[in-house]
Structure formats: C-alpha cells, structure tokens
Length: 319
Image (cartoon, rainbow, N blue to C red; front, top):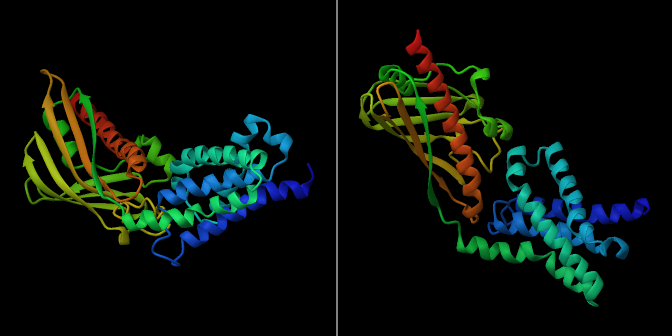
C-alpha cells in the first residue's frame, strides 16, 4: 500500500475527529458539547467508519481488520490531542474503552457499506453527521444529576484513641506513603494533610491535596471516638487550570463531592473497623458510564486515606 493510501485511510478519519472536537469544544452552540454521549460514541464510530470505508477490499474482507484498524486512527487522535494539550490523560483513559468499541462498530458498518451498498458514499455522508444530529436532541433533554455513594472500610489493630486522633487530623503524607494507584495514574492531586480546628459539630476541617486542591469540610455530626460527618465543598476556581482536566475537575459542573462520614466500630478487644463513605454527584448525559469511573476514583482516594490511618494508628499503639 502506497503512502497516499495510508494518508487517506488515516488522515481523513483523523481530520474528521479534530474538526468535530474543535466545533464541540468551542462556543459555536450550546447544544454541541464534548461531554455528551453524542461525542464519546458517535465520533469514534465515525472514525472507524471512515478508516475501513477508505481501506482496500482485500483488507476489508479480513474480519480482524474491520475491528482493529480503526484503533490505529483512534490512537493517532489520542496522541495529537495529548501532544498539543487539547485533552488530558485522565479523560482519555476513561473514554478509551468506549472509543475502541464504538470505532470497531463503525469499522464493521463501514465494511458493509463498501461491500454491499451501491449508495455507500451517500450513507457514509449521513452517518458521519450523526454527532451533529444527535447532540442537540441529547442536550435538549439535558443532563440528569444523580447522587452516588462510595463506601470503603479497613480493619485496624490499634487503640481506639490512636485511631480516632488520626481520623480527625491527618499529618503530612509523604509521597512514599501515597498508595492511590488509580488517582496517581490519572494525574489527580494526591492527599497531603487534613486539619480540624474543633472536635465537634460546627468544626471546620480542611483536607489539603497537592496541585492546589482543597476540600472545605464543615462537621455536621460528631460523636467522639465513634463517628464524624461533614459536608464537602471544593471550589474549582481555587484549582490551577493546569492541575486537573476541566472535564473531570472536582467541584466543576460535571463532578462534585458532597459529603463524607467516618464511623468506627469495635470488632473485638483489640480490633476496630473504620468505615468511610462519601456521596458524590454526577451531571452528565452518560452517568451510567461516568459513575463507574467516579466510584473507582472515590474509592481509591478513600482507601488511600484509610491505609495511612491504619499504618499510623497501629504504629502509635505499638510504640
């Protein structure tokens, strides 16, 4: 296959994706948004459709080619958007599975259009316009905010007072103590420390993360050594624009954390179970998918904090 053919097979889908991204990410219309099912499904569908349609009949007749060739175009789109800081790594990691699946479906449809349909180009032109046709309908119906719960717990062999002192206030967490593998992979801010000015209802707690992220927490329910509940506010304007991808920024219009609760139960004379759960809100038109990732992220953050509390409380009790 000559260079011109490669440029056609990969260049046209790539140009299509970049143009759609430019339009959907701009202020051209309130009905065309990147954070929509129309974009995250029908754009990769169009990429796969164009990649396979412009391929040779010989390649198209290979089932494996129909499903995997579109991935090359998707990965090129990924690399360009990352290299030019058009999109962030966190967003890409979360949507990549959908992009691969949707592009493979598009590749299958593209093969059928070229092999079995006389008016293939007419149908092709109509199908690549689907993001523009579906997005206004999707945005007209609007995003439906939904509340989700992330629950975690850990068992700790330590004195009750040692555990509780590390719950209310968390001293500086060194990078080597940070075990949040998912949030670290996504480039999310890592926890540094938590401060509390008063043990009781009305207390102000500040959870400080790197990259300028601060959770402002107001204690709403408190029982010494037993439970602590607090509201959580993250002000996105406090976070530098380079710290987090705008589409997943905490406290933004798509993802927000609402509250948190610690509960400590005694299992036996020497062991306690520390529960930590939070509620978060999603406001997208694809909450069914976004909630999976958001729940993983919140649990990763919480498990990380619980591990730090366990390690420190057990160490204090032994000393």
